Length: 173
Image 1 (spheres, rainbow, N blue to C red):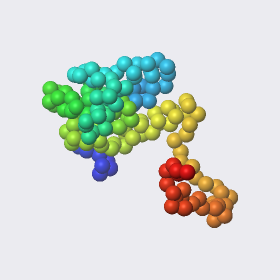
Image 2 (image 1 turned 120 degrees about the vertical axis):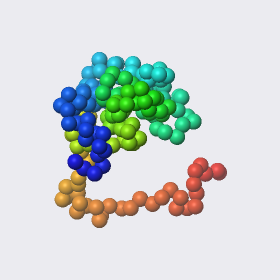
Image 3 (image 1 turned 45 degrees about the vertical axis):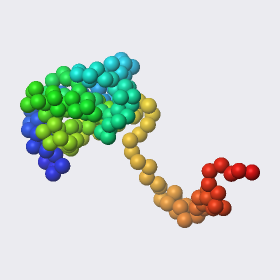
Image 4 (image 1 turned 180 degrees about the vertical axis):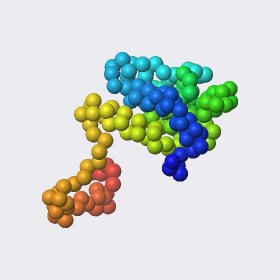
């Protein structure tokens, strides 16, 4: 396993049922593929404070942590990462240490206190992301210039910054 993976994730992914659970969370909650899936995602909320995904911008103004609603990978439980409610869930259920971010599909380990990498979860994430973007006609591949485009780069005129004349912002006349 890669060095970035944690012992909790390695232990979790030894069971096939856990792989299936993680894949379903990523495929159906993080990256829904139907109108029904999108509607269901908007109804998800933290079990403790009832904060929903779209409400995080409103209630998260004073917090340093980014907004994130996590789905426990071991059971059907949703909790905030912002307000550390996921840690309360892991205190009640010490063997529930992995969860998936419903917004971005990333794996979070409460045992390590950090977002972690695991090759199995990454495979699910890449596949779900590719399918999700394809339904909007988008691609997750980066632009790679062709040989002909690379030959044109030296001939492109550089763009000068707007403050060439010492003016910035709105000019007063």
